[in-house]
Length: 540
Figure 1 (tube, helix red, strand yellow):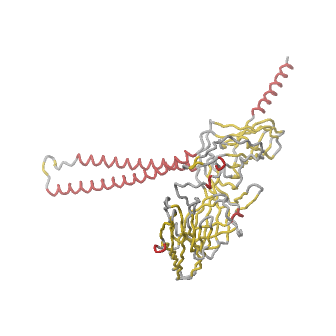
Figure 2 (cartoon, rainbow, N blue to C red):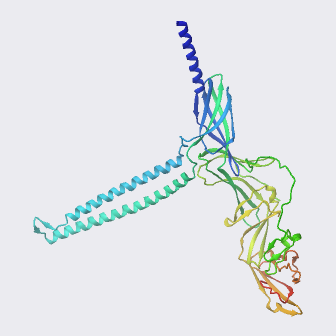
């Protein structure tokens, strides 16, 4: 019997040990050590040091973002243990710890409320004193009338005290208004942060492991989150027309993952982590049935012409148609792969989970530029200083907005489009008021006449360019004559003053070298011949 009881005890202890080993779960915290930010999404790299017991157990990695792409989770480690499985879950019973900024804002609001309350208490005390003074304003002493001196003394006292009270009360109310305004601003900031933070619940990764002995281990894991990214931003800076152009490449990084990125190593990538990388498969292509008669603005187009809409004439309306990289941004390493470029920022950065953009400089180039002045007087008589950068497409830039600065002053905003076919990037550096251009129609040379079934219109223009600067300038002057898509409307350029003329576009171009304090007069004219039953308008 004793032997049997001993056997049961041994079995019970063994089962207990087995159950304990299988029910072991360790909740550990981890630290973000690196983040790779893509244009859409971010890869989060975390690390955790912990101790494990012998046997089968589960490590729960908690306080993670709740929008993890489950298929992107990768876990590995260092130590004498084996990873059996990795699963993901959302813990709705727990919230991500409020970040320090939220705590500071909440504490600030509480402190301001307390100050407002204290001042309100002082105001109430003043009100009680006023009530007391008013209740004792009777100018009688033991039923006898007071002397004039006593009345004057009492009046002076009441006047002085009321003045002091009302003044102090007014100052307190002013202070309350300022405190209330400050509290409102802080509350608005807090509302924005809390509104942009992720919903309740935290992401957790459960790592099932097996270990032959108790030891200290390192867990490394990474995953992809969606609500983060970066937007390209450029600054172009020029000192004068003799200097090279500085092109600053920035990344405006944002994230709303629910977890602040504090003091992390940052990498900015031009890649797309969600691109599946699957090659396309070409398949048979079958034509679909279409309407044989397309319709465009009152014009009937035959079946053979239906796809050639660019050459259709609408009679009812007129239709006018190398860089050297000298240095990069400090503390940035550029790694170019087959399909993307990575910018590794060695300086640590902190990016809060507020969806607000944080500007990070990732690279800087010093680019040679050709400077010239440009004017299209038909559109505007202003003369613009223009910097022309050749070979810019070799920089592999992304599409983005550009802030332009000249001589230390903000000039304008532009846009870089990497899909542009031109190999020269033209940047406007603002208007120069010391160069004056006037475009006027020459009335004596402009006329209309009728010959048979046709009308003729002669149009002549004068363009006067005056250089009021103290040095010679190079100016590209561009104008145009109208074009016609109708067979019975003819346009002929007569005088062009040595302009470069493009018959396809109607553009006239003059490359002028104008000495200081000098002027140039340009004349051109053209003739329009058209049926007399038509009306031509907009010739200017």
